[in-house]
Length: 438
Image (cartoon, rainbow, N blue to C red; front, side, top):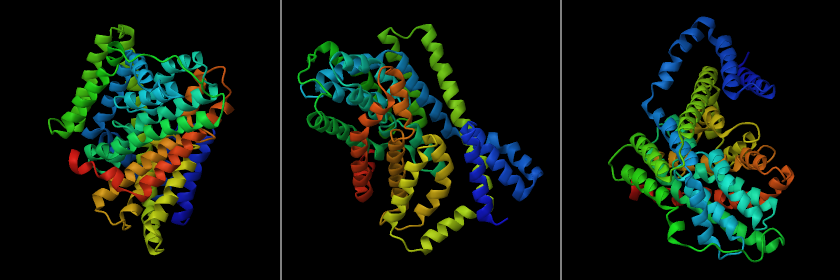
């Protein structure tokens, strides 16, 4: 069996297992195990497994993942989101479609202490959707806005997918966070512009006049916890007071304190935060190990290295190669979640990118590519036929057909496309903050 045939067999087994609803971690593990055993035998595979779990989970940098997840759970269960949305709605209420813009602003601010796209979408939907319905927003615009706004949870630091990318590519987490800030802000502003245009071009999606919330001291208090946590965590990281991992611990403790001050964090919610964090972390680490087995199997075929050499020998324009990879991520987003995509594909694509000349230093190339991947992963959270965020928000809006929610995300997908092209052709947008913040 040729190496290419074997690599295709490994991918085929993985896809077949996914079709029959085997969890992605199991699908990658089993497919990788078959490929490994066919190439090296059972005994070497068992020896590889003997050290796999410790070699992966003993990585100190991985501790940042459960800490940021715990930080997001404290924010979700601590009642911070309601006050935050009230503040955002008061700020944006003067504009037509202002409540929808406020929901996007709230998603962006909540994402600054959450790090999860789905958690951001679900949390802000719980407080914003009833208000948008009460004010006369269509189900299409309301669900589309909240699904798109949820993606800001991974676009604005801290971002769990970006942490995973940093670990896989051995890049500096603080520099990746700095590089993601400006694209995340551009994404948030782009979504609000998309809403402003959409409500003027398509009648009946938003009320002509809204009952404006007044910006009071009480509503201003809603933003203070998140602003304080963001300044403490990221200010401390970039001022050199602590590392990103220590910053995640400080952030989790600060968010816990903010939740206590809100007096909505009951004992049951407190326990739920740790239980949910344990479940999410276990899922991520299992995907890590499944991907490790599959990538080890693919590495033995030497196909990833041969693919990198082939791409370089074709003398294609570097931007053309990156564009092709990003389009592939959009396609993969229809069948895989963002973490699985990163763990499976980065070991294959990253060596290809690093062999191409983009006119930047290797570090800047690696960071810029990570931001481009992050943007495309966010696109995959919305794009049909899956769009996990769309399913989550639509599931909370029982009276809105799924087809209407997919229509509602179209203006935001256009905004995503424009932003991705902008960052593709102008890498400096995501890189210029690095020299000031790191």
